[in-house]
Structure formats: C-alpha cells, structure tokens
Length: 319
Image 1 (cartoon, rainbow, N blue to C red):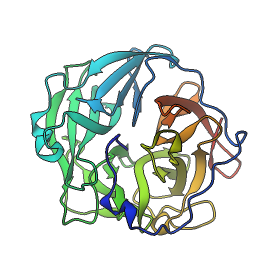
Image 2: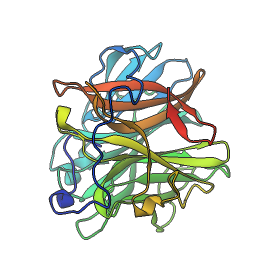
Image 3: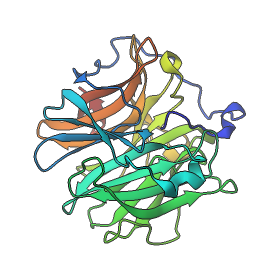
Image 4: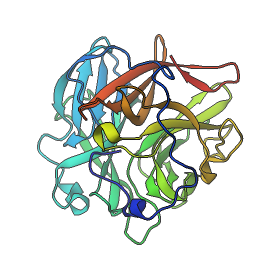
C-alpha cells in the first residue's frame, strides 16, 4: 500500500481475527542482501529484455530504480517527471502516486498505478505503457477503474494477472469490503466489462496489495494483512490462499475462505525487520523471488528480497 492511505474505517472496525504477535526472530529468513538506493514503498519489479531489473514504487510521479544483478540498485528517475495531471481529481493535486504494478508483455512495459488521498476511497487506477521502461518514456493509456465515496471498495493497489486462457484480469483493493477483480481487454489493458468480483476480505479490516501468480495447478493470491506506514510499529504481514480458478474461490491451508478472512502466513516482521508487506512475486532464472517492503528499527522503509519455494503440499515458503 502507499505511504499515505488507509481506510477511514480502521478506527471503528472489529477484525475477524486477532492481530498476530510478532514471530520469533528465527521464524523466517532475513531479507537477502541488497545495496545502493533501496528506500522503497510498495515495490513492483520486472526483468527487462536486456536482463536488468526495473523497480517501480510509490513516489512523486511513480519512482523508478534499476539493477543489473538484483543486489545493487540505483535511482532511475520517475515514470512521469512532468507530472500526471489526470490524477489530480483523486489526489487533491498531490503528485505522489501509489502502489504501481509493473510487468512486461508483448514488447511493452505495462504499469498500473493508484491515485488517491489518505483515508478516502475516492480513488482511481490508471494504466501507462513504455517500450523501454525508462523515465519519461511512458504513455498515459487511461483510467482503468475508479471508486467513489458511495462505493464499498477502494480502487488502489492494482495487480495484473493473465490466466491460462490468455484472459487479462486486474485485482485490487484496500480495506473496505476487501480485494476485488475486474476483467481487462488484452488489446488495450483497460477494463472490458462492468462485473466486479470479490476475492478476499476481513469484514472491513486491514487487507490490501493483492498479487496473483499461477504455479502448477493453482493460482496463488498473496495479500498483505494488518498495518503498514507506522515505521517500526508496523504489523504488515504477507499471507496467501490458492484456487484452481483465477477468479476464486481462494482458500487458506486450513480451508478457510479468503472472503471470510482466511490466509496462510508467508512472512511477518521479526527482530529488526518490521511490517513486511506489499509483496510482488517475480519469476527469475533462479526461481521465484518475493519482493516486498519492510521497516528498520529507525522506521526507514527498505526493499526486501527473498527466494520463494513451495513445500510438499504446494504452499509457498520463503527461502
């Protein structure tokens, strides 16, 4: 999720499950080694045709970072260095844009991103494309989905998935009634119909940042539970459910539906690593990689990267 956004309901909602206490420091592997410009929030990563890595994250005009080896990162400008005037009705003029989703398909980099303000679900998700992914080369492609204050969902935190039939889907959502999904037109990347599907929810409680990947027979829906944006006091954690259909129903390991608050924990804060979340799964040459944000003891937001495997029952496990 973005640095400044949370549902206005957070102060009144009763969660469907108690917030978990922090696990012991040995519960999960520590973030892998990264160096350089690693201050990020809401990271999404893609491997470019030349073998380098491009990270997009929340920031003014959507911030960019690059790396040649997935270890050393450097700042690479922004998607919209000249601003994105079409977003101002949703941001009240703020140029800070949130929670991008980055992918590479059909010779183009595709970027879905959010525009909103703190505590409001007057929000929108837009699309931009670029052949190279470099700063200033992105073309605005239009509005994909929006939410209004009269809606029970929040149109932020987009994630593109293409299913086995080649159909394009966008999942999104934060707080309110949870994670939603809409169908996209593969030719344009924009919304193709009016149907709004529900994938996961916590009865108004903290759930956001969906990310769907297909591995083997299952689609896996990763989401972030609990609270980010509180520095070292953040309780963000990553959970997952799975389904044989991209549109669900998704269930946790214990069989609880994600629409009823279910989720199997994959990663949580521990020791000096706090508030792990807003995850993105990248398929790389050495296997799946989980990219995420976390906070240090000083409250600084950092880039986390770990390898991601599966156990004997097919459930994701951090390595």
